[in-house]
Length: 278
Image 1 (cartoon, rainbow, N blue to C red):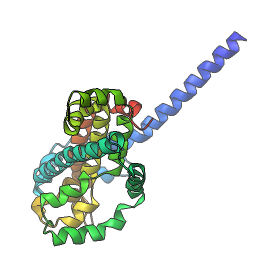
Image 2: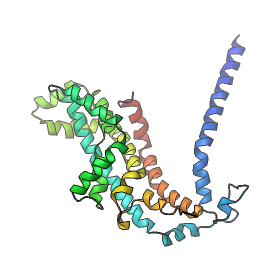
Image 3: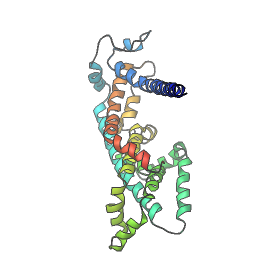
Image 4: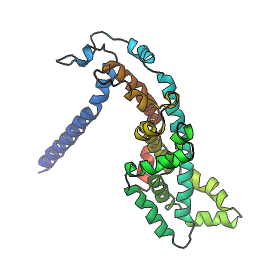
């Protein structure tokens, strides 16, 4: 009887590990293919039958890409827009989450419900009125036009509110009794206690801003203000595409996201466990 249970346990363990391994291969293969493809020449990358490893490693793809467009200018634009947008989104979402979580006022729950309803509205629905507003404000072809729409997030507010709800009210009341204002409690008490949730939101906000394609495509026509996703799309020609150059550009685009995730991985996992997602 004990041997049968032990055998079933091993069988379940082997099956679960096999499924996880197969899933990892499926998800990682496109990245591995893109990485190796960025070192191939234009003929080998579309050769049939395909080969994973390049027959000759060509680093020239990473230098040749600069002849097609100013990729490092696009990289700077993406970094600047993503970093500023992420910092401002953290500040705005943290302030609104603090209000919804810890400051009682009449109609707070109803207002928060209406706030969450905005998550159900697709971005494509708001594009036209948003473009008209930014046009009236003369914010087209500006960094402000790229950044401002990204600093408001109902999901970010919801995520931080759920985490702040877990902070004991007695802790805040003790601060109020010591004479602290709302601003001081928010800045010195609530924000330090919300680091895991803030780190989680920072990763989501940075990835969303970094990968954003539709809004920068609409709001910017000046080449010097293009972000990397929009710039990379210019490599796809009408009749032909230099796939090896495009893959090299995608690898350059992937590196900042990978670095951010590596540095924030600990906070990301802890935040997903302890924050409002639970």
